[in-house]
Image (cartoon, rainbow, N blue to C red; front, side, top):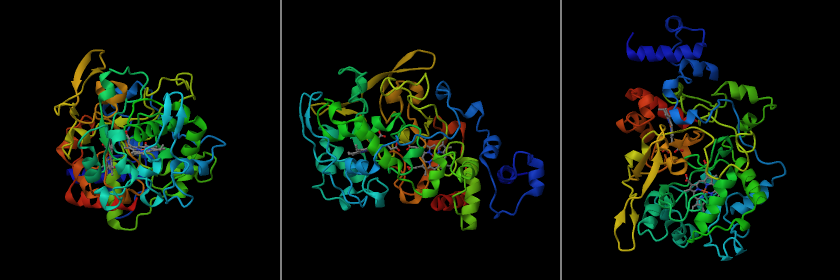
Length: 467
Ligand code: HEC
Ligand code: HEC
């Protein structure tokens, strides 16, 4: 049996249930265009999802589980108020910052906080953009008088290239540890910075961990960080202007934003459709063409080791959220261990846009930031930062270098450009990336190599377009 025949048989075996051996699957193999029936257990066993060789090692110590566990809005939270705090009018489209600026006298700030006019909706534009940004160049869609552009120094803090990178590539510059109270002012971690897109906020309720590397364990951390970093040039916090009930209302608003209302059944075990969605990963996916159906098999074989949450297609591995377990008290130090699995698939090492990761000094010179990172054996390396180190900037672990959370894939055709650095313009570019050396030689790509024929790549794109 040649390789592609074997792959086909493996995919077909997945369609026939765990009892089918490869041999019988060959005899029973369905016509190439018939849509396979697959359930999650079958995919798990056929694709060796539990194989040790594929788990990224460090996250194992977090006791990741594979149950369907999602966060939910707090009872009593007011999504409508959350929308106003987010900076959107009732149409979910028009920016209205009147209730969304978090300014005023602050004891923590030791003075008067004056906003630069940016609200959440400045960077997470309305519903028609799935609460993300329009594609770059940004100034083709947004006037240069808009606070998202006039307020850029709050994030960039004098970096001469930040406005250009934002306009041309749609990437914001900011320091993830800028407000981390566990890091003293002179700690080099405070100076590490990222260039990242503002992601669409659709199906966020299915996330394990928030922000592109999953470092925020609850929405409160993500939203508070956004208010602090994007509205002030100063490193001074103003916690007293951002209340927990406000954050819960904003969370309720964001958690309501589903790409398809049917997905809501996954959040409620008692919903009559829950088991159908939980048991069949493709229950809500309608595939109208033969090519898309063939692409689905390629997706099961090559992509579902990571994109495995049924009907959502982010990664379902998770640990208990804060407050739900004696080992995860609500008082857990800020920016501690993440709540889901993250992978290094090589996107940041590739640095396709040639982004600069050195910091500018006042004399016009540039130098890299050097931080200590701890290895699994307890030794410490002085690491020179030359690309976006992803989750490692939060955990301080060498193993987390370049790790990002696995994004959801519903409605993905309209959510480009793709990856945390907007480095893939189209879904075809994404599929090419997964076939490249950059992916196949990356820390996690090495454990799950991908080589597809031209026809498989075309079919896979058709499948992704249908999600
Ligand atoms: C100046 C632009 C900007 C503003 C203003 C902004 N964000 Fe963001 N947002 C970003 C960027 C950039 C990221 C990616 C951050 C990262 O990965 O470190 C992000 C990520 C997020 C995420 C993570 C989504 C996910 O899939 O995990 C959430 C949630 C979020 N923002 C909510 C908010 C809220 C709530 C506000 C208002 C309080 C806000 N943002 C204001 C730029 C912005
Ligand atoms: C080893 C785990 C892994 C595998 C296997 C994998 N992905 Fe991903 N995928 C990721 C991670 C992590 C990201 C985020 C990378 C980033 O932003 O830097 C991602 C990002 C994406 C994105 C971009 C989404 C967005 O909103 O920007 C798409 C599309 C995607 N993957 C599709 C696929 C397809 C198709 C396959 C199979 C050919 C695949 N993935 C295989 C982990 C994986």
